[in-house]
Image (cartoon, rainbow, N blue to C red; front, top):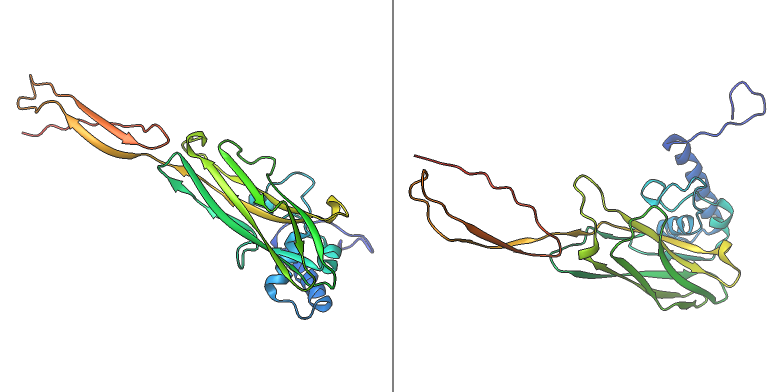
Length: 241
């Protein structure tokens, strides 16, 4: 309510506004689905959210803006990682040129009729794109009445293509989408996030000589490393007598 306006309202943003709003939606969901677990309530709320109009990305907006009606009305919800609901590959670190990671999404159908979904996966606008490929299988999934079905989401990262910029966060994020025949407006979404980290490892240092007299002797050394990125090296000479 907009204080002092009579019957007017005002829009505000922030945790103090979001917390009671989400709690109220959760209460409606519990009333409509008294047997659902907290995980199911959270999943349905996230799955049916819609993107913010200003394009705020997943790291700041999560699954999006809650759609109270769809959250209460849906019979199907999708769970990635336990508790999180979303999928996270965390920080895949590797000195290999390529990395493969696998996660799963489980769809639960609390309704009396089977539901069919087309499964797709894609990066959100604003995400880094270089070097990362995601696939989901099967491409079409049937969730039986009062049953569940599992899809596999595979992440392949070409570490040689990952940008390595000092001070920058290489964030990759997007959605796994489950679209029913009724259309995209009824799509269920599961957000995902990861930050790949390629690195190189020092393998060998070989010196061609030993410095006995620092005033006249010269020595060279060769350093080799292995990994998907080119390392930088700073050398600081030190003399002792």
